[in-house]
Image (cartoon, rainbow, N blue to C red; front, side, top):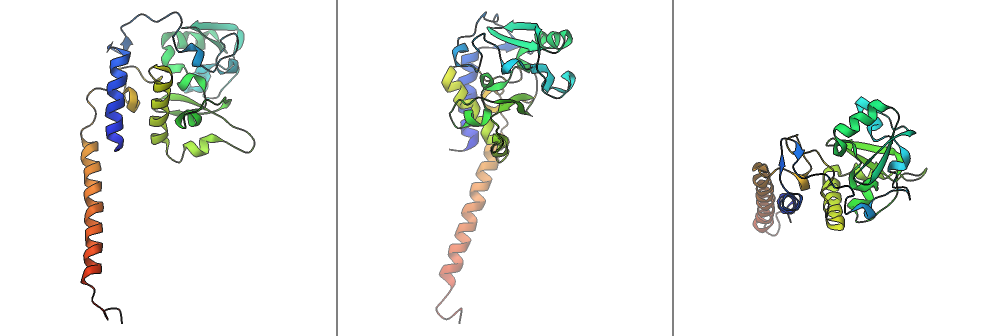
Amino acid sequence: MPRMTVWLACAALVLGACGPKLGGQETSKALEQRPALPDYNLSREALAIEGYDPVSYRPEGGGAPKAGDPSITTTYEGVTYRFVSAENRDRFLASPRHYEPAYGGWCAYAMAKGNKISVDPEAFLLQDDRLLLFYRTALNDTRDKWAEKPDDMLIDADINWRNWTGECPHTRLAGDAPMSPIDGPADAPADDDDADDNLADEAAAAAEAADAGDNDQTPGDGE
């Protein structure tokens, strides 16, 4: 199935499930505890990212993951976060979904494969302005595998997370650009289907030309 078809199908499902958004803000009141919370990668105390500051991964927060201060915390929809400073906590509170890690804090590569695997909080990527965390050991860094097809991986992970939890993937809010394919705008780019059709036509033409060349060759042509 063409990726654009998957994109449109997923966008329709998510937009219908997540409800309308206006002016970059969700219109519905934030839940005190999100329904998908049991599917998150949290400690027994509902602490996320093993206590690392979610803002520290971003340029405005220092650009490198740092363990948060246990005395500087906040809880958002049932998830507790620690921060290295009150300034970072204020940044988070101003736009929580911008800073929260994708897929409940599970390994993004594993989620793309339909699994839940814990992460190394210092193994991360920022892709499409989203914080992605990864499993990493001395012998295995799943970021390398993710990097082979990052756009496809992101779509697969979004679909699996949505199917697993019923929750919208953690992406940019409406009104910001660009968004995740599964959480994307209603008016998707129209050129992608044409591009897929053009590629298919070119492949078919090339195959026909190759077949014609084989059929035109008579015995002895190669002698």
